[in-house]
Image 1 (cartoon, rainbow, N blue to C red):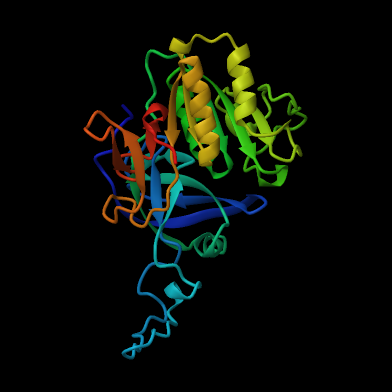
Image 2: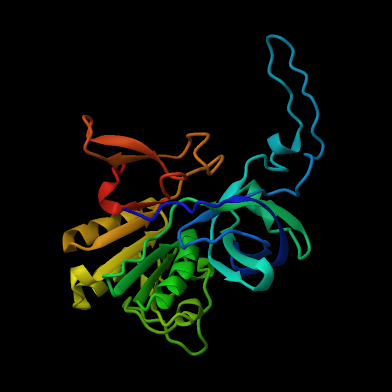
Length: 320
């Protein structure tokens, strides 16, 4: 089973410390969130992509019988989002007197994240968290492989730190469509291998003594192709006992399915952090269902990605 949610969560008013562009369309948002409860890798927050307080410009909409309303509110006309956005924790730093810093890495993909890219140091943002379950760290397994694709890379950074603190040996595989969309910093003069084999080339992973491999769909950096292929090659060449290894993955569903299938063929435990559209992040709206195998009469049931996940055992997931 995957680690359950933390017992504490809440709504916090966080101050923007930095909002830095780190590559094409990707930003690192650093927030000061005093009193933010203990969290673990794999968990996420629901971030409000508008300034806290009363909705600006909201008013009643006339709705004549037999016709559709003419909507002008910002939250309904693509200027000021109504729903919060789920963002994985990429790092959490705790200081004295309950001072906490959160790192969130996001990509501009729509109205909410486009608005988020405009916030500046000193701005205040509302967030709810920590939410969801977490990646469990297995005490009996000394090795770990981290496979992240696109916006599934950030939780791997938080996980790499936790694995290092637990005395585990980790290796990371990171994939992106093209080099300009890789939200990572390369070490100076560090050669990225084009055969997909890991090396000490990524600053964020090297900080936690983890080697990394990079794959891009178009071949502009590292291995040319899907990141699941370098992972497969490493797994078959590394001579790691299946009983000693656990694999963690987050990213596009086809990538995670491929990683799960590879692990199943080799008898390796694989834990996946799924991505779903979430309106609330706490199980109220029932919008983020995942089809899971079970021992009931139907042999399957629906779970919620936000409340029961987002981390699931790959063997439990019924893919579309």
